[in-house]
Amino acid sequence: MISPIFIHMFIQQFEVIPELQPYVKLICTMDCEDDVDTNHIRVLPDTCVELFVNYTSTPVAIIGNELHKRSIVTFRMSRHADVQMRKGAGCVAICFYPGMAYRFFQLPMHVLADRTLALADLWQDMAAEIENKLADACNHYERTIIVQQYLLQQLAQNECDQQLDFCLKQIQQSAAYLPVSELTNNMGISQRHLSRKFQQLVGLSPKVYLRMCRFVRSLDHLKKYPLLSLTEVAYKSGYYDQAHFNRDYKTFTGHTPGQVAHAPDILY
Image (cartoon, rainbow, N blue to C red; front, side, top):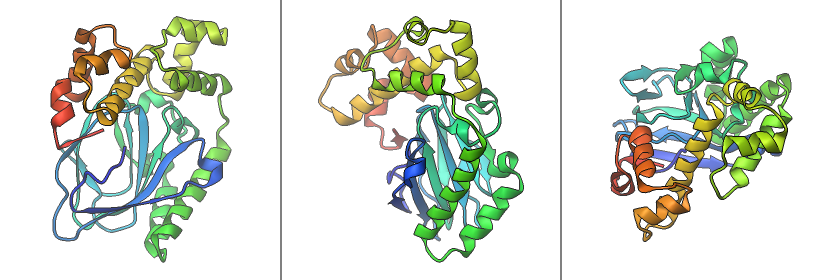
């Protein structure tokens, strides 16, 4: 998720309009200083999708080893990303709730998972249209309203999947790790059918999504309860043992839990 951990950047958060509040977790503007790029940050996966709409002529960011010049969408589902925002860059950033981005992008989400794509590849000419309107806007508040109006247009074109939304709410509201079998029993559908829904609309299998939710929950415990031991964090997050906890951190962050907890250049 977007945070002021980036040095040499000014971030201003705005209210999400009511129609988008079930889908959009955060909207903000991000403006980099003109004379220096931001520091390098490792951004950890959180099953969320983020949209960055560029309103300047400056490239937005270097992600991994790739320079992204215009607006981008990051489908950072289960892999970390190393990010450096470029000097002079400015963009409106939208963070979607887990599993909610499918309403705004008309491609199977499993095709997009763990990729960063140019917005023009997804929204074609509309991407340049939005960028031009943002560049001409008088202030940041107006820019956030413009972006949200385009999101509403996309929302109207794609129907919701009530079964999936019900399933995602169950997962988010549960304090414990839910097995896939419990989800299918609660919904009255087969595991194969649930898996197809998740691949198509979330971008991950149910098993991997549940594993990611447990990992994200542990990150939340690390942040909120710094005095807890790593063993306590593991068990409170739903891990059965320390080995699975350590394995997930190596897989999703490239670091041990202890390194993640104390590294100044890791964002979670």
